[in-house]
Image (tube, rainbow over the protein chains, first blue to last red):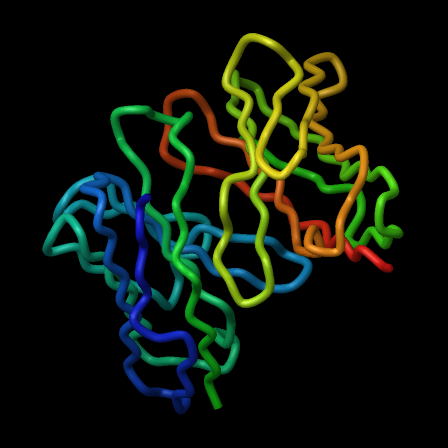
Length: 115
Length: 113
């Protein structure tokens, strides 16, 4: 089974701090994704990456950046955290070879609170 | 552009009763359709997917979904639910060529004893 591991389950940060959320997958998947989950809004795509050092903006990239230096690791960076970034963050991975029919494999999420 | 509408935000149901969670989508291109389940304090896991072929798709834990192209729907059903089915369920679509999966807002299923 694919395992997607997010380094923290809970984080509390102060407004203006730089925040790093880390995600590692162990199944050699090419695609990696960061979603944000908010009640009533479902999951919204922040950024995704289809290869090392490649990144693409999702639907809500403002205030975020990403880094993918190794195939198995995809980091989400909040350059200057704000209270409206308080949310659940979910990392996912998938196989590129299957295209759009490749299901996503998710980590357990990081609940970030910005005070 | 694609979009997904889950018609019910919450569905309460008694144990052993049947349940249907509704999902409609819109897209100008061919899509793949998915249902994911999220148990409390966990990430999402795949319940079932429709890629092509038979419009009735069977998934894990006794769930099934029917793809209806004319009504652009992909409703999820289970003939008899258990307490352990209490979770949030997400309908999702992805286009056949891209990387992006679009999710609905989710339906919270409460199974009562």
